[in-house]
Image (cartoon, rainbow over all chains, first blue to last red):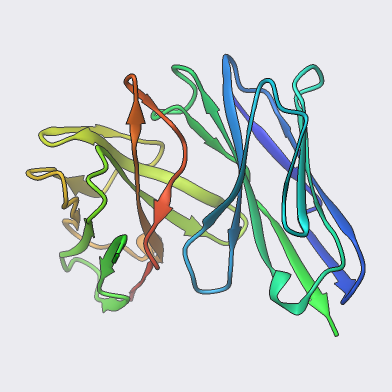
Length: 115
Length: 116
């Protein structure tokens, strides 16, 4: 069964500090991995996509990594801001099969940035 | 560009009542889906559609019906609401390449449903 595990479940850090969120997956055959940001009371929004051939990709203060051999991805946030407080969801796409629609969701990491 | 629009944003029902959550997208996406989000459970797929006239069940379809008569609209129907259906519901759409869901989901703002 395809699975996506995220850690930690929740994280509290001080404004200005860095943090790293983890995503481990057992989805096959792998197509791509996306990180979504979900602000409180809003729908998730895609931050970045990682394909099999990509190791690192940056989007402003967000840097995602992918290790396809160990089936792990991380999302690193640099110099955190209060607006980074949100849930971060890892979603892995299978080329076929996988979940009913080819997508497997992690349960998310709830990040709180304290001033 | 409106994106994905869900209505209503909030709804309170009594057990046994029926209702429809509306979802519309203006991006001409073939793929549309409904999720429910509960604390500690993450997003769970209820039903999805890969095009007009085509629907399929997701992980938690019981108690919900869908139809897709147009590319733009994908309503979710609760036939006889139960307290277990209290949740936040999200509609999403995505484009398809070579028959595969690309995985870039565009979500609506959510509909908060309480069943008493």
